[in-house]
Amino acid sequence: MKRILLYFFLIINIFIYFSFYFPIKPLIIHFTAASILLSAIFIFIVIIIRKLEIKGKVLTYLILSGIIFRIILLPIEPIASNDVYRYIWDGKVQANGINPYTYAPLDESLSHLNSEKLLSKFNYPHLKTIYPPYSQWMFLLAYLIAGESVLGIKLLLLLSEILTLLFLYLALKNFRIEEKYILIYALSPLPIMQFFIDAHVDGFGITLFAVFFYFISANKLLYSYFALGLSFAAKLITIMIYPFLLKGRSIKNFLAVLIVPVITVVLVYLPYSINGFPFESLFLFAQKWYSNGAVFTLFQKIFCDNYLARILSMSLFFISFIWLYFDRRDFKEKAYLIFILFFLFSPVVHPWYVTWIAFLTVLNFRWSGVVLISTISISNIYAMNLSLKNNWEMSDWLLLLEYLPVIIFLIQEEFKFRNNNKLINHGLS
Image: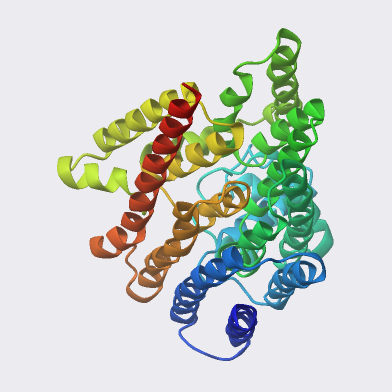
């Protein structure tokens, strides 16, 4: 009965994904409603997966279902975000032999590259690109494949997602975790919709993260450190786990984990730094932007001060980081917790950011992660309100609905972890 119910939910998923081919307007309402409905169904799918024994051909078919869901959405144009057009622009700039960190799109030096299809579609054309070098390689390759079409980025994302699932599966086997948990990522509507409708860049970085965890699981440490260094150059967020790798290492291993990722990052960034500064727009972003933050929004409401709210939120995150660094947990758990804590304290949490939690929840099953990658769909209401009302806003009650269940589950999990440790220590004594 549970297996039949699982297949029934997957059939509903297929119908919802195919619904994007029908002229249901406004598209942004369709996108928002579909993402919330799919996320609700996904929670039931996870409940069923947890109770079933899923192996062999059945597991393969279910993973293929996740890939098919992604393929279904390949032709769909972006709906909730226009970031992909900036990716294509950066690729076009590079294809013309220009460093994307040298000029902002509106700079007169790039006037000969102006395109109505691109320049009018993405935000902040007065700012230089914010995206790291590895992502820039993908943008260039996508432009060479498909020109100004979104399809180039999506095809590379499809390849990246297939590789992610492959390395994730191998890592699960090496870590001796049930392979069925790969379905949390394979069937999650979050990466499917964020990568294959709006074509967000995080999919490239997650693949490198999967490669890193595979090599860690296979005890091929030098390769893992190289993959981690590349992941820094795809999405700087992965640098958070770096200090955890340094703890408790032998001198030889410590030097390797210290040197290999750093040299990798330097070599990747160096060509782009000769006549540009890759971090210029990132610094501006870190100082001013905010959207959909949990703790940050609370502080902002209390103190009515953007800067103070940032300081307090980041201070609490730093304290959490220090606690986690010295805590006795394995590396996978620390990676999961530092990511979810970062998103709880961050001033900016877009839905596609949380795809990293979808990945890490596979390696560390926690309901807090499953709930976050589901409730984050509520935040698509920001994009809906911007499209319909020209106002980037969402009710505080919806923000509470988005984050409160996550925090409750996280606290429960922590109490359970502490109680289990006490029982183990008591038994040993």
